[in-house]
Image (cartoon, rainbow, N blue to C red; front, side, top):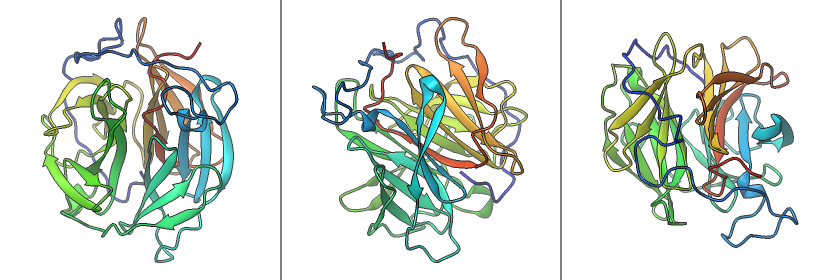
Length: 298
């Protein structure tokens, strides 16, 4: 997400994330299998390839990268050449279970992008449905024992009078449905999203002075288990992902390359800088499929 407006007001954090169990209070916990396919490409028993287990990020400079969290390394895949209006830039990204990226641009368009070579294909999605022009986005499975998934979106043009709260996009009809406003949020606070393979959805909220992580009710947008991310500010470019049982935040103040911060959900639940400079680019979108491990790979 690349900010064009100053979002966020102060908020009082609620009960924190249950770091000891890795759970935020819902059933299931972080108990999906992890690891990578031994041959690097063939689907495993759950139908997932190694490529679908990686994190992907898109930069303000229109480049697509893969990210391997446990080694904190980025690999350039290629330049996005999506046929936008010429001025639009990437805003947010989600990755489906097949390993295909879905990228929202600043003009509201939505493209499918190959995570193999960064090639683009247009969709029939009509921009600005229900006022959702720019939005955060993520896939989450429809249950902790399901491989079916839904694309959730979060309105990010709140102060400009646009859509707000949580919605979802039907990828068959390309229609956006509003699900509800976030609870406990002040005016102007938006969120980027990340989902999990055990059916949960989380928001990275633009609260001040520090950002907030919260779990989101997928049915109506209510938030719970707020955790203040001390020392982490969304800045002008932000995104996040859940991988290997931990949360990974990508932030930039607008003048500097992005940094990567990790929130561990086990032990003391430490917040630490995993990479202070990603290598000269600014991350505006991150996507991780529901194939990604929800516990540390062995």
